[in-house]
Amino acid sequence: MGSAKPNIVIVHWHDTGRYLGAYGLEHVRTPNVDRLATDGVVFERSFATAPLCSPSRGSLFTGRYPHSNGLMGLAHLGWEYHANEHTLPMLLAAHGYRSVLVGLQHEAPTRRPSATTTSST
Image (cartoon, rainbow, N blue to C red; front, top):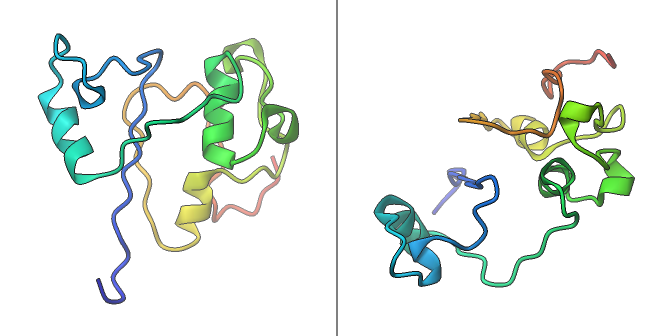
């Protein structure tokens, strides 16, 4: 692979669970996702840190439990990360990666500053 940085693609859905062809469900047709899974990594034994979407996503993108990162409830109800919490896209940006969000994230009620922003607001 040399010195080139690898491409990183993280795909997650809202309330999908394991209802994908990649997990062996023959009655669910997801050919494009199945192709991604064939060439990538499929997590067979993964667990959520919280029963709600915002805190679970907060843990996914910080590597920290909801009580540690501050996102202990739903973002649309006002819960948010602690100030100065660093998310995966922010950490990757510091290493020259570009992050793209397609669809709903539901982990921050407002737009967060980028990794290169020094403002604490």
